[in-house]
Structures are given as C-alpha cells and as structure tokens.
Length: 479
Image 1 (cartoon, one colour):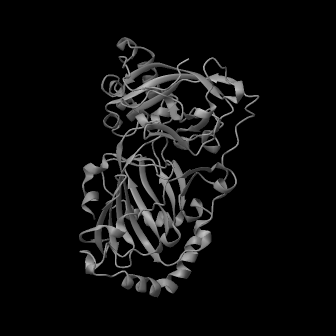
Image 2 (cartoon, one colour):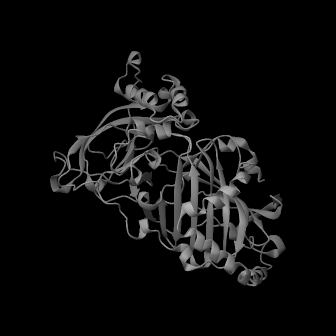
Image 3 (cartoon, helix red, strand yellow):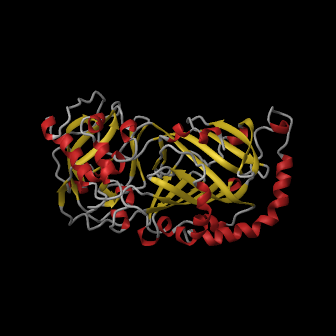
C-alpha cells in the first residue's frame, strides 16, 4: 500500500466530488485497507445496474485483450530511451494507451464503499468512470450512480439511472484523465499491491494537482492517489480533495466506440424540462443558506444555496466543524418563479461566480445529494426528507425594482438577512451532537432547526449566534 493511503490522518478530509467531472464525498479516518477487497463481487453484481453500456464495454474489452497484448508490448519497448534518469533510461513510466479495469474506492462512513468500472483510451483522448456510491447519511442503504464521460475537452457527468438520470455537461480547457502528468513523472520506488509488483511514480500539474500511482509492468496502475483543491457546490471552501483508487481485473487493449457512447440523459434529455410553464408558475419566497469562505464575496447569483434541511447534507458530515472553521453562513431571502429547472453546479473560481450543467435562466432545484424520495432527483418535489438545493443563474436575475416575470426574469429581490460564523453552530449550538442523533434518520429536523434559529436571532437564549459583518467585496444587488 502506498504510504499516502496508510496515513489515516490524511483521510480526515473532504474526498471527492461529482461536480462537473468530480465526485463529492466526505471521508473519515481509514485508508482503502481491507475494505476495497470486499467490493469485487459487488462490482460484478452491480454491472447491470450501473449503465446499459457496461456489458458491451466489458465484452469488448475481453475480446480485444488478447489481440492487443503484442501491440502493447511493442509500445512498451518503443518507449525506452536514454534521455532521462527514469527507469531503464526512460522518461517517466510506460503507460498503456488503452485499458479498462474494475476499481474500488473506500470513502469513510458517509460514503462507505464505492466501486465501479474505468475505461481509458489516451490515443483518442477519452475515458469513462461508471461508479456506484453508497451514501448512508440520510438513510442506510442509499446509493447514488454516476457515469463520468470525458471526450476531448467535453466532460459529461450523468447522475442517477433510467428516467431519474440527470446529465451535467461542462467544457474544460483541455483533456484530463487520471494518468495526466505521469508520463513525465518522478520514480519513487517499488512496492507490491495485492500481489502485483509495481513502480511508484509521482507527478504535479500546474493547477496544483498531485498524482501518485503504482504502475505495473503492463502500464496500468494498481493503485492511484490524486490530491487537488476542490470547490464544492454552495460550500465553496478550499479543501484538499484526495481521490484514491484500487484497480482490479485489468484488461489491456483497444476499446470500442460503444464503450464511450453518450447516455440517453446526455444525448437527448439535457437540460431537463421545467416543472411547469414558467409563464404560468407562481412566485414563492425562499429562505436559503450559503456557506462560504470569509474572503469570498457575499453574493447569491450564479451560486448554489440550500434550505435548512438541504444544508444538513454538508453541515452534518463527519468533522464538518473542522472543515468549516473560519467559514461564514448567510441567510438569504429571494423570491423565485417556481417552475424549477435543472440544478446547476456553481463555484467561485478566479474571482467569478460560474455555473455548469444547469439552465440559463430557470432557478434550479435538487434534493440533498439527489437522494430525496421525489423523481428526477427532487427537481419537482417538495423534498421534505432530504431538503432542497437551489441554483440561481445570473441570466435569470431580475433588475432593481423589477418583479419576478418581468422580461422573463425568474428570481430577484434577494436580501442577505444575517451572517454568522460557522464555528458558532458547532461550538455554541452543538450542531454535531444533533447531527449524530439525526444521522441515518432523514429528515434532520432537529439539526435544521438549530441552523434556522442560529440565523434568526443573535440572542443566545433563542438559539441565536452573533452577527458577522462581511469584509469581502460584493457585486450583489440587495433590493
């Protein structure tokens, strides 16, 4: 096992996100260890559940495997040269151009065990991850399904299955896969992963991503860790996200076109239809909460937010008090057209509020982690079990003095009522204790009430928290 995985303290962090190409998850203090070994049978048993393309993809992999062994051996030999200090005079490791494998991802108690399939085709700049993720925060046995397809600079993330599936496409500056940067990596030594000898290589990318992988003789990793800064939903905090995978049942060889076919959700059903005709929908007042860094502008356009129940998906994860130390929570009250469109993932990047995977003008809605009992991941449901998340697109914002519906605008009148330090929730209001009682028993009514009371008043006798005055610049129109 790589040293990074053996260090359990590294797992007490935010792990991975399914936010425009990444999976959101929150880890606790154990490495992959023995957990992943139990996932192999589950991976195979869940093949039919994850995606209609899985069977075809795996069959093609097996058919192509034998035909491509010689080709890959030739590629390996051709990659040797005398221009570096790498193994055998080679610059970086030999990396198989095309391969597939099952993978296991151990991610703590909230996302207890995850497993799936990975398909890698570097010559054609494409890769795919099909993932089943257990999420026990709201109810034991809850499962989320993800299909991440990267082709060139386009990244499509499909969340859910069948009629409940939602596509979230985004365009990135360049192609990226799990192996990016390793071809010119630095050799760190040799280890054995589950009986397979492999060489440890590490590489850093200009964006701060650091990848460490143990590459076997066939050019395929058996274990891979990637650390990057993540901007997550309406949390917007600079956490270190550690993605750690174990690969099994490796199949080296060319992959067919059908392996990288678009899902129906992305090919035909993006964006999802609004819940009702925006011209006939009613206007409603929302009470929303945003968690942000103290240095971030206090704004809500092109940002994500949640109602009190919805924010429990973040505030009730393990060690949330540590993760949000120094963060600020603001209570916003906008009015919005209740036609509800597809929820977008938004983040504060490079001094701008940016959204991906939603609609241009409609206010987006989704249940917490998309795990509510309502269809289409809660877009058109009240979400009384897991709460709601909202995205407020700048293109749909009403101008000063305009009512919702003017010129087709879909939301406006946003007022920032109060802001508090997130630490007050955990240190004075003891939110973590309440979350512990609520966990696994959605809705988190007791915990949501603590958040609401903390922002409703500064009076500690009423469960309130002191006001925090934002010093960050703001471009938000307060009407």
